[in-house]
Image (cartoon, rainbow over all chains, first blue to last red; front, side):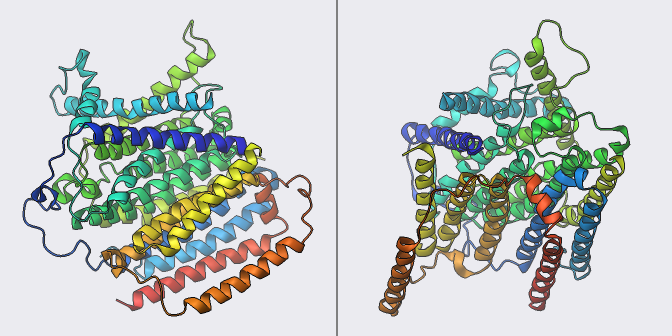
Length: 118
Length: 321
Length: 164
Protein backbone atom coordinates (compact mmCIF):
# COMPACT_ATOMS: atom_id res chain seq x y z
CA UNK A 1 0.00 0.00 0.00
CA UNK A 2 2.81 2.48 0.53
CA UNK A 3 3.80 1.40 -2.96
CA UNK A 4 0.57 2.92 -4.32
CA UNK A 5 1.49 6.27 -2.88
CA UNK A 6 5.05 5.91 -4.10
CA UNK A 7 3.48 5.97 -7.57
CA UNK A 8 1.69 9.16 -6.61
CA UNK A 9 4.95 10.70 -5.42
CA UNK A 10 6.73 9.72 -8.65
CA UNK A 11 3.91 11.24 -10.67
CA UNK A 12 4.05 14.41 -8.64
CA UNK A 13 7.78 14.76 -9.23
CA UNK A 14 7.57 13.96 -12.92
CA UNK A 15 4.64 16.33 -13.28
CA UNK A 16 6.51 19.11 -11.51
CA UNK A 17 9.50 18.46 -13.71
CA UNK A 18 7.41 18.60 -16.85
CA UNK A 19 5.80 21.81 -15.66
CA UNK A 20 9.16 23.35 -14.87
CA UNK A 21 10.65 22.23 -18.18
CA UNK A 22 8.89 24.82 -20.35
CA UNK A 23 9.86 27.47 -17.83
CA UNK A 24 13.46 26.44 -18.26
CA UNK A 25 13.16 26.51 -22.04
CA UNK A 26 11.66 29.98 -21.89
CA UNK A 27 14.44 31.16 -19.62
CA UNK A 28 16.93 30.00 -22.22
CA UNK A 29 15.18 31.10 -25.35
CA UNK A 30 13.13 34.16 -24.64
CA UNK A 31 14.40 37.66 -25.29
CA UNK A 32 15.05 39.82 -22.29
CA UNK A 33 14.66 43.53 -22.57
CA UNK A 34 13.31 44.58 -19.23
CA UNK A 35 12.90 48.25 -18.72
CA UNK A 36 11.10 49.77 -15.76
CA UNK A 37 7.91 50.75 -17.55
CA UNK A 38 7.25 47.20 -18.56
CA UNK A 39 7.25 45.94 -15.03
CA UNK A 40 4.63 48.26 -13.57
CA UNK A 41 1.61 46.31 -12.31
CA UNK A 42 -1.24 46.42 -14.75
CA UNK A 43 -4.21 48.65 -13.94
CA UNK A 44 -5.81 49.20 -17.33
CA UNK A 45 -3.08 51.54 -18.42
CA UNK A 46 -3.11 54.10 -15.63
CA UNK A 47 -0.29 54.56 -13.20
CA UNK A 48 -1.01 52.33 -10.19
CA UNK A 49 -1.66 54.00 -6.89
CA UNK A 50 -1.61 52.69 -3.37
CA UNK A 51 -0.08 49.55 -2.00
CA UNK A 52 -0.93 46.14 -3.37
CA UNK A 53 -2.99 45.27 -0.36
CA UNK A 54 -6.01 46.94 1.16
CA UNK A 55 -8.08 46.23 4.22
CA UNK A 56 -10.02 43.20 3.16
CA UNK A 57 -13.15 42.22 4.88
CA UNK A 58 -13.59 39.57 7.48
CA UNK A 59 -16.02 37.78 5.17
CA UNK A 60 -13.16 35.95 3.43
CA UNK A 61 -12.09 34.57 6.75
CA UNK A 62 -15.63 33.54 7.70
CA UNK A 63 -16.08 31.63 4.47
CA UNK A 64 -12.75 29.92 4.92
CA UNK A 65 -13.60 29.01 8.48
CA UNK A 66 -17.04 27.68 7.62
CA UNK A 67 -15.45 25.63 4.86
CA UNK A 68 -12.88 24.20 7.24
CA UNK A 69 -15.47 23.12 9.79
CA UNK A 70 -17.77 21.54 7.24
CA UNK A 71 -14.80 19.85 5.59
CA UNK A 72 -13.95 18.23 8.91
CA UNK A 73 -17.53 17.03 9.06
CA UNK A 74 -17.27 15.60 5.55
CA UNK A 75 -14.22 13.52 6.39
CA UNK A 76 -16.22 11.78 9.12
CA UNK A 77 -18.83 10.86 6.56
CA UNK A 78 -16.35 9.06 4.27
CA UNK A 79 -15.79 6.03 6.53
CA UNK A 80 -19.48 5.99 7.40
CA UNK A 81 -20.37 5.73 3.71
CA UNK A 82 -18.10 2.73 3.32
CA UNK A 83 -19.44 0.74 6.27
CA UNK A 84 -23.10 1.75 6.18
CA UNK A 85 -24.24 -1.32 4.34
CA UNK A 86 -22.89 -3.68 6.95
CA UNK A 87 -23.80 -1.71 10.05
CA UNK A 88 -27.31 -0.77 9.05
CA UNK A 89 -29.88 1.32 10.86
CA UNK A 90 -27.95 2.16 14.01
CA UNK A 91 -25.13 3.75 12.00
CA UNK A 92 -27.69 5.70 10.01
CA UNK A 93 -29.22 7.18 13.13
CA UNK A 94 -25.77 8.14 14.40
CA UNK A 95 -25.04 9.99 11.21
CA UNK A 96 -28.46 11.61 11.31
CA UNK A 97 -27.62 13.07 14.71
CA UNK A 98 -24.20 14.17 13.49
CA UNK A 99 -25.54 15.89 10.38
CA UNK A 100 -28.42 17.31 12.38
CA UNK A 101 -26.08 19.08 14.79
CA UNK A 102 -24.10 20.47 11.89
CA UNK A 103 -27.27 21.45 10.09
CA UNK A 104 -28.08 23.52 13.16
CA UNK A 105 -24.67 25.14 12.75
CA UNK A 106 -25.36 25.93 9.09
CA UNK A 107 -28.76 27.40 9.98
CA UNK A 108 -27.16 29.51 12.69
CA UNK A 109 -24.52 30.82 10.31
CA UNK A 110 -27.21 31.58 7.73
CA UNK A 111 -29.43 33.37 10.24
CA UNK A 112 -26.59 35.43 11.67
CA UNK A 113 -25.58 36.58 8.24
CA UNK A 114 -22.15 34.93 8.26
CA UNK A 115 -22.83 33.62 4.76
CA UNK A 116 -23.57 37.01 3.28
CA UNK A 117 -21.04 38.60 1.04
CA UNK A 118 -22.08 42.20 1.50
CA UNK B 1 10.22 1.69 -15.63
CA UNK B 2 7.77 3.49 -13.44
CA UNK B 3 9.41 6.80 -14.29
CA UNK B 4 9.07 6.08 -17.99
CA UNK B 5 5.39 5.27 -17.58
CA UNK B 6 4.99 8.45 -15.55
CA UNK B 7 6.61 10.53 -18.28
CA UNK B 8 4.44 9.01 -20.99
CA UNK B 9 1.34 9.42 -18.90
CA UNK B 10 2.14 13.02 -18.08
CA UNK B 11 2.60 13.74 -21.76
CA UNK B 12 -0.84 12.33 -22.41
CA UNK B 13 -2.32 14.16 -19.45
CA UNK B 14 -0.86 17.38 -20.78
CA UNK B 15 -2.05 16.61 -24.30
CA UNK B 16 -5.64 16.37 -23.12
CA UNK B 17 -5.88 19.98 -21.97
CA UNK B 18 -4.07 21.13 -25.10
CA UNK B 19 -6.74 19.45 -27.15
CA UNK B 20 -9.37 21.01 -24.94
CA UNK B 21 -8.12 24.51 -25.63
CA UNK B 22 -8.60 23.86 -29.33
CA UNK B 23 -11.98 22.24 -28.73
CA UNK B 24 -13.06 25.28 -26.75
CA UNK B 25 -12.16 27.62 -29.58
CA UNK B 26 -13.89 25.49 -32.19
CA UNK B 27 -17.02 24.93 -30.12
CA UNK B 28 -17.29 28.57 -29.17
CA UNK B 29 -16.91 29.40 -32.85
CA UNK B 30 -19.71 27.11 -33.95
CA UNK B 31 -21.99 28.42 -31.22
CA UNK B 32 -21.23 31.94 -32.33
CA UNK B 33 -21.80 31.14 -36.03
CA UNK B 34 -18.20 31.39 -37.11
CA UNK B 35 -15.51 28.84 -37.93
CA UNK B 36 -12.64 29.17 -35.47
CA UNK B 37 -9.03 28.29 -36.17
CA UNK B 38 -8.68 26.43 -39.47
CA UNK B 39 -5.36 27.30 -41.00
CA UNK B 40 -2.79 25.52 -38.90
CA UNK B 41 -2.90 21.84 -39.68
CA UNK B 42 -5.93 19.99 -41.03
CA UNK B 43 -9.02 21.79 -39.70
CA UNK B 44 -6.85 23.79 -37.36
CA UNK B 45 -5.90 20.77 -35.25
CA UNK B 46 -2.34 21.90 -34.75
CA UNK B 47 -3.34 25.38 -33.57
CA UNK B 48 -2.64 24.74 -29.91
CA UNK B 49 0.70 23.16 -30.71
CA UNK B 50 1.65 26.25 -32.66
CA UNK B 51 0.45 28.48 -29.82
CA UNK B 52 2.48 26.56 -27.29
CA UNK B 53 5.61 26.80 -29.40
CA UNK B 54 5.02 30.52 -29.76
CA UNK B 55 4.66 30.92 -26.02
CA UNK B 56 8.10 29.42 -25.55
CA UNK B 57 9.60 32.38 -27.35
CA UNK B 58 7.81 35.20 -25.62
CA UNK B 59 9.47 37.39 -23.10
CA UNK B 60 8.94 36.58 -19.46
CA UNK B 61 8.13 39.68 -17.45
CA UNK B 62 8.23 39.60 -13.69
CA UNK B 63 6.37 42.59 -12.29
CA UNK B 64 8.10 45.20 -10.20
CA UNK B 65 8.52 44.12 -6.59
CA UNK B 66 6.73 40.85 -7.15
CA UNK B 67 7.78 37.86 -5.17
CA UNK B 68 9.86 35.99 -7.71
CA UNK B 69 10.02 32.61 -5.99
CA UNK B 70 6.30 32.35 -5.28
CA UNK B 71 5.53 33.86 -8.67
CA UNK B 72 7.14 30.86 -10.34
CA UNK B 73 6.04 28.21 -7.86
CA UNK B 74 2.33 29.04 -7.99
CA UNK B 75 1.65 27.96 -11.60
CA UNK B 76 3.65 24.78 -11.13
CA UNK B 77 1.58 23.92 -8.07
CA UNK B 78 -1.67 24.48 -9.95
CA UNK B 79 -0.52 22.40 -12.94
CA UNK B 80 0.78 19.53 -10.80
CA UNK B 81 -2.42 19.42 -8.74
CA UNK B 82 -4.46 19.10 -11.94
CA UNK B 83 -2.18 16.35 -13.29
CA UNK B 84 -2.22 14.37 -10.07
CA UNK B 85 -6.02 14.13 -10.34
CA UNK B 86 -5.60 11.60 -13.12
CA UNK B 87 -3.88 8.98 -10.99
CA UNK B 88 -7.16 7.43 -9.87
CA UNK B 89 -9.16 7.68 -13.09
CA UNK B 90 -9.82 4.27 -14.70
CA UNK B 91 -9.64 4.69 -18.46
CA UNK B 92 -10.35 1.07 -19.35
CA UNK B 93 -10.55 -2.25 -17.50
CA UNK B 94 -7.16 -2.62 -15.90
CA UNK B 95 -5.97 0.76 -17.17
CA UNK B 96 -5.71 2.89 -14.11
CA UNK B 97 -2.45 4.38 -12.91
CA UNK B 98 -3.04 3.19 -9.38
CA UNK B 99 -6.30 1.99 -7.91
CA UNK B 100 -5.93 3.67 -4.55
CA UNK B 101 -8.07 2.33 -1.75
CA UNK B 102 -9.19 5.87 -0.98
CA UNK B 103 -9.67 6.82 -4.63
CA UNK B 104 -12.32 9.52 -4.58
CA UNK B 105 -11.09 10.96 -1.28
CA UNK B 106 -7.66 11.31 -2.89
CA UNK B 107 -9.26 13.13 -5.83
CA UNK B 108 -10.99 15.59 -3.50
CA UNK B 109 -7.76 16.11 -1.56
CA UNK B 110 -5.63 16.81 -4.61
CA UNK B 111 -8.23 19.17 -6.08
CA UNK B 112 -7.99 21.25 -2.95
CA UNK B 113 -4.29 21.88 -3.61
CA UNK B 114 -5.09 24.21 -6.50
CA UNK B 115 -6.55 26.78 -4.11
CA UNK B 116 -3.15 27.45 -2.55
CA UNK B 117 -1.56 27.87 -5.96
CA UNK B 118 -4.16 30.43 -6.93
CA UNK B 119 -3.91 32.38 -3.68
CA UNK B 120 -0.13 32.47 -3.91
CA UNK B 121 -0.21 33.43 -7.57
CA UNK B 122 -2.64 36.26 -6.92
CA UNK B 123 -0.55 37.65 -4.08
CA UNK B 124 2.84 37.17 -5.69
CA UNK B 125 1.95 39.44 -8.59
CA UNK B 126 2.00 42.56 -6.42
CA UNK B 127 -1.11 43.82 -8.14
CA UNK B 128 -4.31 44.75 -6.26
CA UNK B 129 -6.55 43.21 -8.90
CA UNK B 130 -4.63 39.97 -9.03
CA UNK B 131 -4.83 39.69 -5.28
CA UNK B 132 -8.53 40.44 -5.26
CA UNK B 133 -9.09 37.91 -8.03
CA UNK B 134 -7.08 35.31 -6.18
CA UNK B 135 -8.98 35.83 -2.93
CA UNK B 136 -12.36 35.68 -4.63
CA UNK B 137 -11.37 32.62 -6.59
CA UNK B 138 -10.17 30.92 -3.44
CA UNK B 139 -13.39 31.77 -1.58
CA UNK B 140 -15.42 30.43 -4.50
CA UNK B 141 -13.45 27.22 -4.98
CA UNK B 142 -13.45 26.49 -1.31
CA UNK B 143 -17.21 27.03 -1.03
CA UNK B 144 -17.92 24.59 -3.84
CA UNK B 145 -15.66 21.84 -2.57
CA UNK B 146 -18.29 20.98 0.01
CA UNK B 147 -21.18 20.15 -2.36
CA UNK B 148 -18.64 18.34 -4.54
CA UNK B 149 -17.62 16.24 -1.56
CA UNK B 150 -21.22 15.45 -0.74
CA UNK B 151 -21.91 14.22 -4.30
CA UNK B 152 -18.90 11.94 -4.06
CA UNK B 153 -20.23 10.72 -0.73
CA UNK B 154 -23.60 9.81 -2.20
CA UNK B 155 -21.83 7.57 -4.72
CA UNK B 156 -19.63 6.12 -1.99
CA UNK B 157 -22.69 5.37 0.15
CA UNK B 158 -24.52 3.64 -2.66
CA UNK B 159 -21.55 1.50 -3.67
CA UNK B 160 -19.89 1.02 -0.29
CA UNK B 161 -16.39 1.77 -1.54
CA UNK B 162 -14.07 4.70 -2.21
CA UNK B 163 -12.13 3.01 -4.99
CA UNK B 164 -12.90 4.32 -8.47
CA UNK B 165 -12.45 0.94 -10.14
CA UNK B 166 -14.91 -0.73 -7.83
CA UNK B 167 -17.36 2.12 -8.34
CA UNK B 168 -17.29 1.57 -12.10
CA UNK B 169 -17.81 -2.15 -11.60
CA UNK B 170 -20.77 -1.52 -9.30
CA UNK B 171 -22.72 0.43 -11.90
CA UNK B 172 -25.49 0.63 -13.04
CA UNK B 173 -27.08 1.62 -9.78
CA UNK B 174 -30.28 -0.07 -8.60
CA UNK B 175 -33.24 1.71 -10.10
CA UNK B 176 -34.69 2.85 -6.79
CA UNK B 177 -31.56 4.90 -6.14
CA UNK B 178 -31.85 6.95 -9.30
CA UNK B 179 -33.36 10.14 -7.86
CA UNK B 180 -30.44 10.40 -5.43
CA UNK B 181 -27.95 9.71 -8.18
CA UNK B 182 -29.46 12.29 -10.50
CA UNK B 183 -29.43 14.98 -7.82
CA UNK B 184 -25.86 14.09 -6.91
CA UNK B 185 -24.82 14.19 -10.56
CA UNK B 186 -26.34 17.63 -11.09
CA UNK B 187 -24.73 19.01 -7.93
CA UNK B 188 -21.42 17.53 -9.06
CA UNK B 189 -21.62 19.20 -12.46
CA UNK B 190 -22.39 22.59 -10.97
CA UNK B 191 -19.67 22.27 -8.34
CA UNK B 192 -17.10 21.04 -10.87
CA UNK B 193 -17.81 24.00 -13.13
CA UNK B 194 -17.30 26.33 -10.20
CA UNK B 195 -14.11 24.55 -9.15
CA UNK B 196 -12.65 25.02 -12.60
CA UNK B 197 -13.56 28.72 -12.50
CA UNK B 198 -15.63 28.47 -15.64
CA UNK B 199 -18.65 30.47 -16.66
CA UNK B 200 -21.18 30.83 -15.16
CA UNK B 201 -18.73 30.95 -12.23
CA UNK B 202 -15.72 32.70 -13.63
CA UNK B 203 -16.05 36.02 -11.85
CA UNK B 204 -12.51 35.74 -10.45
CA UNK B 205 -11.11 35.82 -13.93
CA UNK B 206 -13.81 37.80 -15.66
CA UNK B 207 -12.18 39.49 -18.57
CA UNK B 208 -14.22 42.63 -18.48
CA UNK B 209 -14.00 43.16 -14.78
CA UNK B 210 -10.78 42.01 -13.26
CA UNK B 211 -8.69 41.74 -16.39
CA UNK B 212 -8.08 38.02 -16.06
CA UNK B 213 -7.92 38.34 -12.27
CA UNK B 214 -5.22 36.44 -10.51
CA UNK B 215 -3.25 35.73 -13.62
CA UNK B 216 -3.25 39.12 -15.27
CA UNK B 217 0.43 39.64 -14.56
CA UNK B 218 1.55 36.28 -15.82
CA UNK B 219 3.27 36.26 -19.17
CA UNK B 220 3.54 33.30 -21.49
CA UNK B 221 4.67 30.07 -20.03
CA UNK B 222 3.49 30.64 -16.50
CA UNK B 223 0.14 31.69 -17.88
CA UNK B 224 0.09 28.54 -19.98
CA UNK B 225 0.70 26.49 -16.87
CA UNK B 226 -2.25 28.11 -15.12
CA UNK B 227 -4.38 27.36 -18.16
CA UNK B 228 -3.10 23.82 -18.13
CA UNK B 229 -4.24 23.58 -14.55
CA UNK B 230 -7.68 24.97 -15.32
CA UNK B 231 -8.36 22.80 -18.37
CA UNK B 232 -6.73 19.81 -16.77
CA UNK B 233 -9.01 20.19 -13.79
CA UNK B 234 -11.98 20.45 -16.14
CA UNK B 235 -10.95 17.27 -17.96
CA UNK B 236 -10.30 15.45 -14.71
CA UNK B 237 -13.70 16.46 -13.33
CA UNK B 238 -15.41 15.30 -16.52
CA UNK B 239 -13.51 12.03 -16.37
CA UNK B 240 -14.54 11.57 -12.75
CA UNK B 241 -18.14 12.39 -13.62
CA UNK B 242 -18.02 9.69 -16.30
CA UNK B 243 -16.51 7.25 -13.82
CA UNK B 244 -19.00 7.91 -11.07
CA UNK B 245 -22.24 8.56 -12.87
CA UNK B 246 -22.05 7.42 -16.48
CA UNK B 247 -20.58 3.96 -16.06
CA UNK B 248 -16.93 4.66 -16.83
CA UNK B 249 -15.62 2.36 -19.51
CA UNK B 250 -18.76 0.24 -19.75
CA UNK B 251 -20.76 0.44 -22.93
CA UNK B 252 -24.00 -1.10 -24.15
CA UNK B 253 -22.38 -2.74 -27.16
CA UNK B 254 -18.89 -3.79 -28.15
CA UNK B 255 -17.13 -2.52 -31.23
CA UNK B 256 -15.92 -5.46 -33.33
CA UNK B 257 -12.22 -6.12 -33.38
CA UNK B 258 -11.16 -3.89 -30.50
CA UNK B 259 -10.91 -6.16 -27.51
CA UNK B 260 -11.97 -5.26 -23.98
CA UNK B 261 -9.32 -2.60 -23.36
CA UNK B 262 -9.80 -0.78 -26.65
CA UNK B 263 -13.54 -0.96 -26.22
CA UNK B 264 -13.43 0.43 -22.74
CA UNK B 265 -11.14 3.21 -23.84
CA UNK B 266 -13.44 4.26 -26.69
CA UNK B 267 -16.50 4.37 -24.46
CA UNK B 268 -14.70 6.15 -21.67
CA UNK B 269 -13.16 8.84 -23.84
CA UNK B 270 -16.40 9.27 -25.76
CA UNK B 271 -18.40 9.87 -22.61
CA UNK B 272 -15.78 12.12 -21.06
CA UNK B 273 -15.56 14.34 -24.09
CA UNK B 274 -19.34 14.45 -24.32
CA UNK B 275 -19.38 15.85 -20.79
CA UNK B 276 -16.64 18.33 -21.71
CA UNK B 277 -18.65 19.40 -24.76
CA UNK B 278 -21.69 19.91 -22.55
CA UNK B 279 -19.72 22.05 -20.11
CA UNK B 280 -18.29 24.14 -22.93
CA UNK B 281 -21.75 24.55 -24.39
CA UNK B 282 -22.92 25.88 -21.03
CA UNK B 283 -19.96 28.21 -20.87
CA UNK B 284 -20.71 29.94 -24.15
CA UNK B 285 -24.42 30.17 -23.53
CA UNK B 286 -24.86 31.64 -20.08
CA UNK B 287 -23.86 34.95 -18.49
CA UNK B 288 -21.88 34.89 -15.30
CA UNK B 289 -23.06 35.08 -11.73
CA UNK B 290 -22.16 37.81 -9.27
CA UNK B 291 -19.96 36.79 -6.40
CA UNK B 292 -22.73 36.95 -3.83
CA UNK B 293 -25.11 34.96 -6.03
CA UNK B 294 -22.36 32.42 -6.58
CA UNK B 295 -21.68 31.94 -2.91
CA UNK B 296 -25.36 31.89 -2.05
CA UNK B 297 -25.94 29.09 -4.54
CA UNK B 298 -23.26 27.03 -2.90
CA UNK B 299 -24.00 27.54 0.77
CA UNK B 300 -27.75 28.10 0.77
CA UNK B 301 -28.85 25.82 -2.05
CA UNK B 302 -26.36 23.13 -2.93
CA UNK B 303 -25.12 22.37 0.54
CA UNK B 304 -28.51 21.75 2.22
CA UNK B 305 -29.75 19.85 -0.84
CA UNK B 306 -26.66 17.63 -0.83
CA UNK B 307 -26.93 16.93 2.87
CA UNK B 308 -30.55 15.86 2.53
CA UNK B 309 -29.68 13.83 -0.57
CA UNK B 310 -26.97 12.01 1.35
CA UNK B 311 -29.39 11.11 4.12
CA UNK B 312 -31.90 9.82 1.59
CA UNK B 313 -29.18 7.72 -0.04
CA UNK B 314 -28.22 6.35 3.37
CA UNK B 315 -31.86 5.48 4.05
CA UNK B 316 -32.02 3.65 0.73
CA UNK B 317 -28.92 1.62 1.48
CA UNK B 318 -30.23 0.62 4.88
CA UNK B 319 -33.57 -0.23 3.33
CA UNK B 320 -32.16 -2.29 0.48
CA UNK B 321 -30.04 -4.36 2.81
CA UNK C 1 19.11 1.00 3.66
CA UNK C 2 15.99 -0.23 1.99
CA UNK C 3 13.44 1.84 0.10
CA UNK C 4 11.26 2.40 3.13
CA UNK C 5 14.09 3.81 5.22
CA UNK C 6 15.12 6.02 2.32
CA UNK C 7 11.56 7.31 1.96
CA UNK C 8 11.43 7.96 5.69
CA UNK C 9 14.60 10.03 5.67
CA UNK C 10 13.51 11.98 2.62
CA UNK C 11 10.10 12.76 4.11
CA UNK C 12 11.55 13.62 7.50
CA UNK C 13 13.98 15.98 5.82
CA UNK C 14 11.07 17.61 3.96
CA UNK C 15 9.18 18.08 7.21
CA UNK C 16 12.15 19.49 9.11
CA UNK C 17 13.33 21.82 6.36
CA UNK C 18 9.78 23.02 5.74
CA UNK C 19 9.23 23.52 9.44
CA UNK C 20 12.47 25.43 9.74
CA UNK C 21 11.41 27.71 6.89
CA UNK C 22 8.03 28.30 8.49
CA UNK C 23 9.60 29.33 11.77
CA UNK C 24 12.38 31.56 10.60
CA UNK C 25 11.08 33.06 7.35
CA UNK C 26 11.10 36.83 7.51
CA UNK C 27 8.24 37.08 5.05
CA UNK C 28 4.95 35.84 6.48
CA UNK C 29 3.56 34.64 3.18
CA UNK C 30 6.68 32.57 2.56
CA UNK C 31 6.25 31.10 6.00
CA UNK C 32 2.65 30.14 5.31
CA UNK C 33 3.45 28.59 1.95
CA UNK C 34 6.31 26.62 3.52
CA UNK C 35 3.65 24.88 5.57
CA UNK C 36 2.68 23.03 2.41
CA UNK C 37 5.83 20.86 2.05
CA UNK C 38 5.88 20.37 5.81
CA UNK C 39 2.33 19.03 5.93
CA UNK C 40 2.78 17.00 2.74
CA UNK C 41 5.84 15.42 4.33
CA UNK C 42 3.75 14.47 7.35
CA UNK C 43 1.16 12.99 5.00
CA UNK C 44 3.94 10.91 3.44
CA UNK C 45 4.95 9.68 6.88
CA UNK C 46 1.39 8.51 7.43
CA UNK C 47 1.70 6.49 4.23
CA UNK C 48 4.72 4.73 5.68
CA UNK C 49 2.56 3.79 8.65
CA UNK C 50 0.04 2.20 6.25
CA UNK C 51 -2.57 4.78 7.23
CA UNK C 52 -3.68 5.93 3.80
CA UNK C 53 -7.04 7.21 4.94
CA UNK C 54 -5.29 9.57 7.34
CA UNK C 55 -2.93 10.59 4.54
CA UNK C 56 -5.78 11.66 2.31
CA UNK C 57 -7.45 13.47 5.20
CA UNK C 58 -4.19 15.23 6.09
CA UNK C 59 -3.89 16.56 2.56
CA UNK C 60 -7.55 17.49 2.32
CA UNK C 61 -7.84 19.25 5.68
CA UNK C 62 -4.39 20.52 6.58
CA UNK C 63 -3.10 21.50 3.19
CA UNK C 64 -6.41 22.21 1.54
CA UNK C 65 -8.28 23.99 4.30
CA UNK C 66 -6.08 25.06 7.18
CA UNK C 67 -3.26 26.45 5.07
CA UNK C 68 -5.82 28.29 2.95
CA UNK C 69 -7.35 29.75 6.10
CA UNK C 70 -3.93 30.83 7.37
CA UNK C 71 -3.19 32.46 4.04
CA UNK C 72 -6.54 34.29 4.17
CA UNK C 73 -5.71 35.60 7.61
CA UNK C 74 -2.23 36.73 6.59
CA UNK C 75 -3.56 38.48 3.52
CA UNK C 76 -6.29 40.15 5.58
CA UNK C 77 -3.87 41.71 8.00
CA UNK C 78 -0.76 43.78 7.64
CA UNK C 79 1.52 40.79 7.43
CA UNK C 80 1.31 40.58 3.69
CA UNK C 81 2.86 43.93 2.97
CA UNK C 82 6.25 42.37 3.16
CA UNK C 83 7.10 44.06 6.41
CA UNK C 84 10.16 42.38 7.72
CA UNK C 85 9.38 40.71 11.00
CA UNK C 86 12.14 40.84 13.53
CA UNK C 87 13.34 37.31 14.07
CA UNK C 88 15.52 37.72 17.13
CA UNK C 89 14.86 39.40 20.42
CA UNK C 90 16.78 39.78 23.70
CA UNK C 91 15.73 36.44 25.13
CA UNK C 92 17.99 34.25 22.99
CA UNK C 93 20.21 32.92 25.86
CA UNK C 94 17.16 31.93 27.92
CA UNK C 95 15.63 30.23 24.89
CA UNK C 96 18.84 28.33 24.20
CA UNK C 97 18.88 27.16 27.81
CA UNK C 98 15.32 25.88 27.71
CA UNK C 99 15.73 24.20 24.34
CA UNK C 100 19.01 22.65 25.40
CA UNK C 101 17.40 21.26 28.52
CA UNK C 102 14.51 19.86 26.51
CA UNK C 103 16.91 18.29 24.01
CA UNK C 104 18.88 16.63 26.80
CA UNK C 105 15.66 15.27 28.28
CA UNK C 106 14.43 13.88 24.97
CA UNK C 107 17.76 12.33 24.07
CA UNK C 108 17.95 10.75 27.48
CA UNK C 109 14.55 9.18 27.01
CA UNK C 110 15.38 8.02 23.48
CA UNK C 111 18.56 6.33 24.59
CA UNK C 112 17.13 4.62 27.64
CA UNK C 113 13.86 3.20 26.31
CA UNK C 114 14.30 -0.31 24.93
CA UNK C 115 12.91 0.18 21.43
CA UNK C 116 12.16 -3.31 20.19
CA UNK C 117 11.71 -4.14 16.55
CA UNK C 118 8.30 -3.32 15.02
CA UNK C 119 5.65 -4.56 17.44
CA UNK C 120 3.90 -6.87 15.03
CA UNK C 121 1.73 -6.06 11.98
CA UNK C 122 0.01 -2.71 11.89
CA UNK C 123 -3.76 -2.73 12.38
CA UNK C 124 -5.68 -1.82 9.24
CA UNK C 125 -6.27 1.91 8.89
CA UNK C 126 -8.43 1.79 5.79
CA UNK C 127 -11.73 3.68 5.71
CA UNK C 128 -13.74 0.57 6.53
CA UNK C 129 -11.84 -0.14 9.72
CA UNK C 130 -11.90 3.49 10.81
CA UNK C 131 -15.63 3.67 10.16
CA UNK C 132 -16.35 0.54 12.12
CA UNK C 133 -14.34 1.84 15.02
CA UNK C 134 -16.01 5.18 15.42
CA UNK C 135 -19.50 3.94 14.70
CA UNK C 136 -19.39 1.13 17.21
CA UNK C 137 -17.04 1.44 20.16
CA UNK C 138 -16.34 5.17 19.96
CA UNK C 139 -19.74 6.49 19.06
CA UNK C 140 -19.91 8.96 21.94
CA UNK C 141 -16.63 10.58 20.95
CA UNK C 142 -17.93 10.87 17.40
CA UNK C 143 -21.12 12.65 18.44
CA UNK C 144 -19.25 14.92 20.82
CA UNK C 145 -17.01 15.89 17.91
CA UNK C 146 -20.00 17.27 16.10
CA UNK C 147 -20.79 19.39 19.15
CA UNK C 148 -17.21 20.67 19.24
CA UNK C 149 -17.42 21.64 15.58
CA UNK C 150 -20.72 23.41 16.24
CA UNK C 151 -19.19 25.28 19.16
CA UNK C 152 -16.24 26.42 17.04
CA UNK C 153 -18.54 27.65 14.30
CA UNK C 154 -20.79 29.57 16.67
CA UNK C 155 -17.83 31.03 18.57
CA UNK C 156 -16.05 32.20 15.45
CA UNK C 157 -19.19 33.81 14.06
CA UNK C 158 -19.88 35.61 17.32
CA UNK C 159 -16.36 36.97 17.51
CA UNK C 160 -16.13 37.92 13.85
CA UNK C 161 -19.52 39.60 13.72
CA UNK C 162 -18.85 41.62 16.81
CA UNK C 163 -16.22 43.56 14.96
CA UNK C 164 -18.65 44.81 12.35
